[in-house]
Length: 125
Image (tube, rainbow, N blue to C red; front, side, top):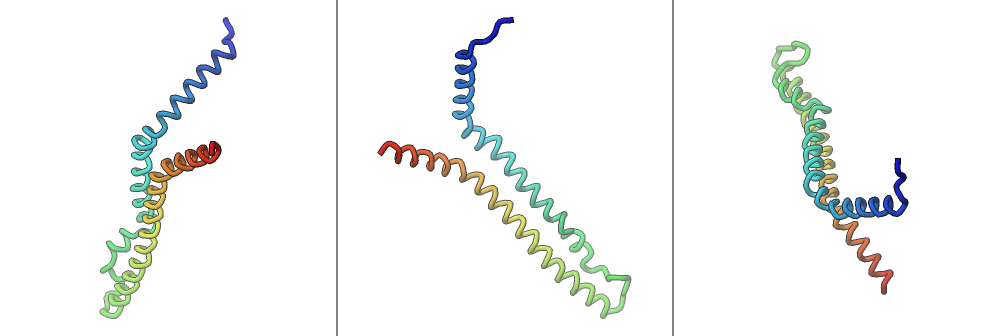
């Protein structure tokens, strides 16, 4: 078995690293963006499941504890309505955080490249 020379290894590592660096923006805004977008949609569904919002909405008009009197139905409706509002605020908050993360993902690559360019120019001048 023949040993690879150090210069050959460095050359291939340099070429591969340079290729990956050039292709990073392409991957970032194609496959990476698709993955982050799907994760954002999944996290919105997950937050709705976490708070059980669909179950509360589905049972909005069902009386609690089998209490079928008018007062029992009114109290059950009121409690469930308030819980839907509170849980809805939680779902909206987590969904907004997910979308903020998505926007950060979209903006972070150009801003980091801009920072590198500004610092390289500061070194030169």
